[in-house]
Image (cartoon, rainbow, N blue to C red; front, side):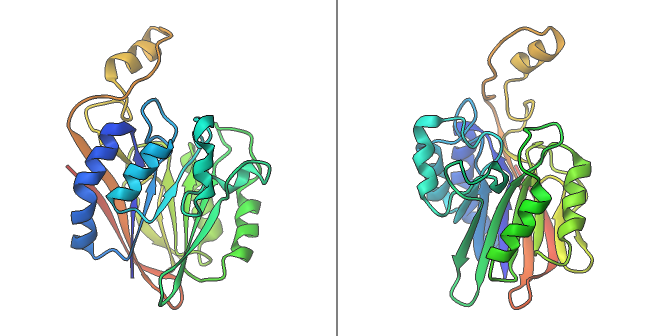
Length: 254
């Protein structure tokens, strides 16, 4: 079977590009299930009911999020949808959940969402949270979106879950890394799947504003860049009976 994973979709322009390209990608790679990180899909960051609908209408089956999961308080009701998940280590006090299981008929596929803690929010330990969720996922086909800043923490999670999940797919830093591999002959891994949005930008945001903030410390609000988009992601081929990843195919679609 094949799972198509799409890196962080940035803003409305990223959603529109996803809508144009995802259907053809699903056909080309014969993807059985599509997972999209949508935590930056609303203009100005976060996710709204509108941006989530755009992603589902494009052909996504599951939407994962990250540190901007709760940016839009008025849209928190989106987490009533079992196919929109947030990092599980935010804890049970927060709305939503960090694990969903999709019934594919011939098998079940679990999608788990976790957030890193290095250089990010002080959340519950993602490693112990992963252990708890693995007990709930009654299937060998488990995919983890690990939304984290530090490459070391992402790599550590990959090795920590190696042999126990089908793939660990890094998000958050918006730059696709060149380290797609299979750990311990079982678990697919990539430090970051990349992003879907304007390529001529700084992580999807307007270059001029980002540079003024970083160089001159001008207190300007970030806004999405305008221009030609690209899509980043990865196709994970796996054996549904045992959850073993057999191939990782990084994608950059312009």
